[in-house]
Length: 300
Image 1 (tube, one colour):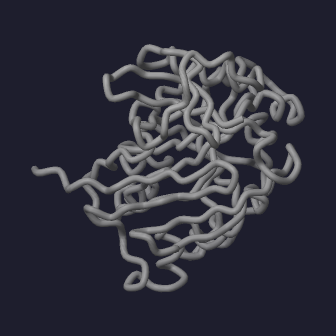
Image 2 (cartoon, one colour):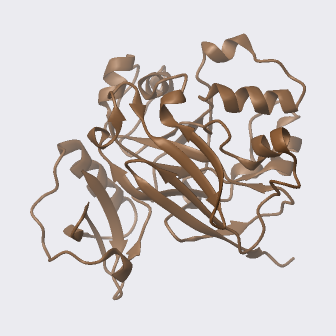
């Protein structure tokens, strides 16, 4: 099942199912976490309620992020190719602990944007996209084993973890994780799909992942290349802590899935940083295309 969230031309918001016939509304919702809860509840049940209206064409409404205000966002670092290339660019070998510890940072749940929203341009000269998949948790739980953690996942969506690389580089040199370098925008969408929509096994889903900038393919990978499974990610997140219904769990960047990695491998003239007006499309097989345009730089 593919669940969508949208706003009609009169400003009314709905949650429903994305089908070949169009968007089928199953509930009229308020703004904020009421809609998040509806999406999670429908996904947990594995079926949408009876429709409340006839299908509408997707181009007749405004798609919204399926989860707009998650309780938290934990973004992991789970693809070896990306980690190895990024560390090599800083003159570092792979840390053996990476294979044992699925590390993450906390992102900002208040700066989520959705399909076709503009990306605010932060104070940076090195704006980057990151091609990721995010899982959404459907229960409140602590200290989950990997199998139970996998069962706690109700769906997957595309995640673009936009980054200001120059700020990130300076901040992380002080020994903590990213701060303002990843504080301004993260995109989710276009829909939330239940786990059965993805190929492969539930434990190890497969999905081709592609990024395009202004229509040109820049990145390509596969979700199957993830080192730590999503069950392991959620399990680690819940250890001595709490995951909550609606929490977003990012996979981290797939190999080749960002400009930082591409420029280290092929040069910055071939893969320059994002500029105002650039259109970034992330496509994940079985989920869809998440498209965003970079806004103009903020005037001082």
